[in-house]
Length: 382
Image (tube, rainbow, N blue to C red):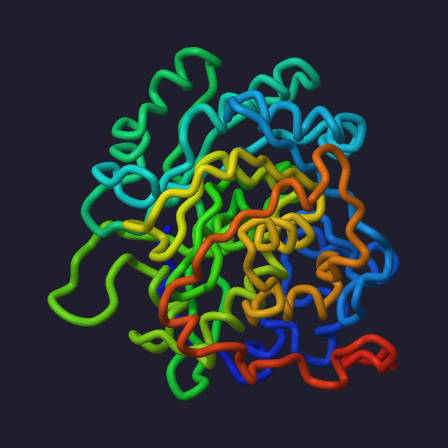
């Protein structure tokens, strides 16, 4: 399965990341790219949407309540028709978020996934898999499933639990040290246009990404983890190749690497469990906040912008959210998000960002002028 000899010409490399002569068409996608008129990106994002900010409004469901399972279910019920239509004949992959099975509060609780499964089994006959790709170098995904109580979910709903780290993969490129191209292995299922990808994270702050919500949950799951422990240097297979600098920096290419992967891996549905979120120090070891909110949307960027606002934080700070919004992959403008369910003002809490973000303040990492609305896109048709 492993590919050897990652040697490519400069032209091949530029083509693989979407910057070659045909970059405006397929952006390196081997799946879903057909004729110019029918281009799709990742799990089905129209190619013509790229490089222009999205002007159409997004619909985001917000539900506040006293039961995690129930508010997740109700958040989906609010947009039932849209979800059922979007699933169509696809199979469904639910992607929860797990970190360490011996550390509580950092994982997606089983009841959040139960709320999603309750909805799906009532409204679709699609095949459903629950898959994760953990980053720990010693504790496997299946050990995390067991430690967090997901085996009971498997038995209760008769769904399959899958370690995505052990599934087929495809090669993609990201930027590494000194802006050199770095090949990584990316899980194939997360890029399959025949899979309806549901991202179900817990609402948390993050020491490197500001917040970890639906997008980061799948983007950082995509690179393969070998469960190996080299004597020195980066570990966890290809996941840590996304981090170019070991220390926090708002100029870390991590943000651009997540943006690159978003053209290949993108949630079809975001379901954010904010019943009990993590503040101060994420993705593990932070202070828990009883915010009792669930967020759901078929626009993952709009869901993450909303989730960030629910946390009382600034959605314009994470560079990768800005990049993804500027590229037209989702609606990142709060003024163009239509909220249904519980009013947003009734859902806002005051989480605290990780200290390094508080010290850094608002970054100079911005989207270039040519990438902004009202300007010509960076890539022009001939």
